[in-house]
Image (cartoon, rainbow, N blue to C red; front, side, top):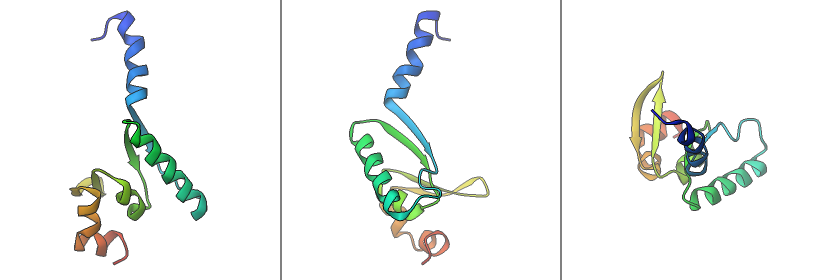
Length: 97
């Protein structure tokens, strides 16, 4: 349990080291989507860890250090972004071939 003075500091430190992004490209134009991903990459390059939930799996995996594919709430596939992009079953089932 955090003591009173530390309790206020921990969330601030975590906010600087970790970000979560939920569906950043939902409903945006492709040009805007590309710009969003450029900004996400810039944030990642500063050393901030990012947890992203994204429907555009191909683009998200192309910048991901690690990826997880959930099917009905269960983790069915995991690996580096490249490994998942190269996996025939992932490609066929989730990336349109």
